[in-house]
Length: 71
Image 1: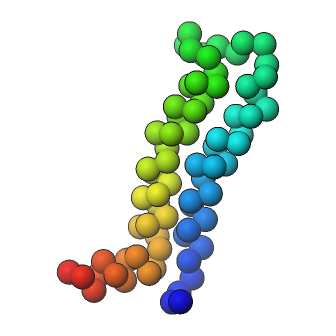
Image 2 (image 1 turned 90 degrees about the vertical axis):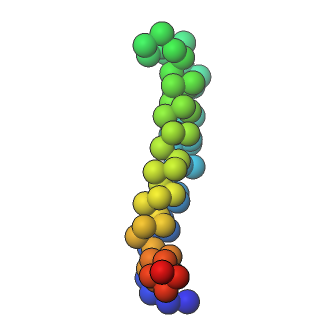
Image 3 (image 1 turned 135 degrees about the vertical axis):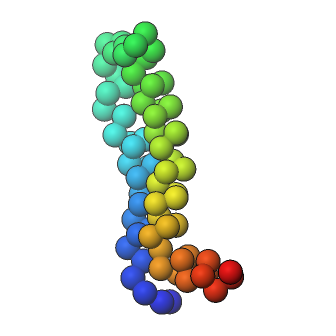
């Protein structure tokens, strides 16, 4: 295995976002912008998932080396 692959820690972002919402879902109907908080938070976490994947890939030395060798 080559290099330091700490960039793969970005892949912990989506599960963390999903778990952060758990303490707030049992509150008395929290509503933001007319949408239940849990639905809004899950939508936000889902939309952020590709961003975390992109960040992990772009900063991964193995991935960038493979991209350079291919072109």
